[in-house]
Length: 502
Ligand SMILES: CC(C)(COP(=O)(O)OP(=O)(O)OC[C@H]1O[C@@H](n2cnc3c(N)ncnc32)[C@H](O)[C@@H]1OP(=O)(O)O)[C@@H](O)C(=O)NCCC(=O)NCCSC(=O)CC(=O)O
Image (tube, rainbow, N blue to C red; front, side, top):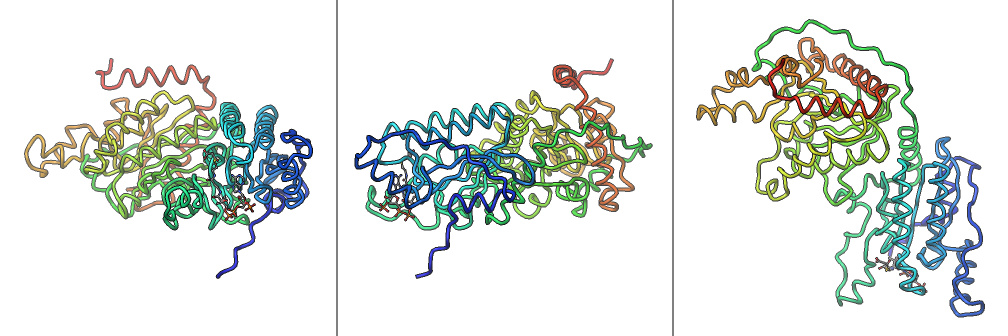
């Protein structure tokens, strides 16, 4: 039998993650929950002796990458890291103090869940813990969790699942019901390989699986991004260039070139500090939607982009992709970061699964949520913009279009099939449907066009830099606006859409 890997104690974990010598405990003596001399008091004393901590939860503060952070760590050696009333009190106090002192919070549980010795009074503390997390997050403070081996039961089902970013420890058992409990209750073993960090990642429940050595850099990048205020410097605009009046079909053809840069190239060449996130956090993922935190020069933001590489290599944009996008919208609101959405899709999935997964409803929810999102929003039409799946990410404060990007209700071939019963008249129909960037500008759907020389596939680096500069300029411009004026301008803009210009 292979030997179990050593799992770090709470103190080893804290030493590994925090900047050297920065740890300071916040803990006071735990609440007395057992009459002196009672069997449970004796058990607690023995647990403390074994673990070297006075409870299953350790709280305090330190620095990660130079940022001051609140820390909550579980100690599995203390009664399996289980949460009784005293441990719950510590967790809540730490969230309350982090809220008061406006500190980011790093939580690293390792737990068998609610402490069985304390029963229901301990179980119901999941409510007050969740309330403390919610109050903390309402203040737009960032919360990152590292789920260690094992994270189970009421810990996974409260503070373990509420992070903005959630990372798992490699090989960790992470699950709701303990496998031993399942076997005892149902008389058969729980399926192998389900409650592992790797499997949860594969199902869109974790953003990443990282050993502790790599966790620190990820946590530091997250904190760099979410704690860095907009630098306040106005960003220079991209010079306006004369644009050739090319036929719509020419742009459509160029936009379909597989060598055209997509969201990943734009971020690689035009942004810094990119921190990719994964999945909905609720059991789904979709490679056709790339979600990340990133910085365009001085401005950090949430980026949600339709990913042509994912569409080409895996599957078209499905409803799960739009649910990932809506996670991005929530993150932007919760972290009070501007949002950049990128449109580049050959069209939403047309399939049984997409229908049953709620494709139309997801488009509706994206439209309804994005158009009223409180934070500044910039949309980039980067490539193809086909149908409701594309429109779902459009309603922003500012819309930038690449010269050869376009937006249309269907692929032009489909529109031609509807009107002419053949796809062959797509070029003519695209012209009539006013899908080109120049038409979109004239119709008040986009605010500006970023030129291509002669198209982005032939100058990816220069194009991505130009586009990134335009994004950065719009973000810095929006940061200057009063939020209520910005939102009212957005409302007016979309209220006017489609009406003949005055
Ligand atoms: C966490 C584990 C996967 C760890 O497995 P391991 O094989 O590493 O360790 P183990 O099972 O030998 O456990 C180590 C010791 O911790 C004890 N122990 C484990 N979980 C405990 C808990 N919740 N309360 C009190 N003690 C607990 C075990 O009895 C054992 O004690 P000793 O060494 O004395 O024998 C497993 O212990 C487990 O499945 N625990 C139950 C998980 C679960 O279903 N929790 C739900 C609780 S209800 C809840 O949280 C609310 C909710 O679900 O909503």
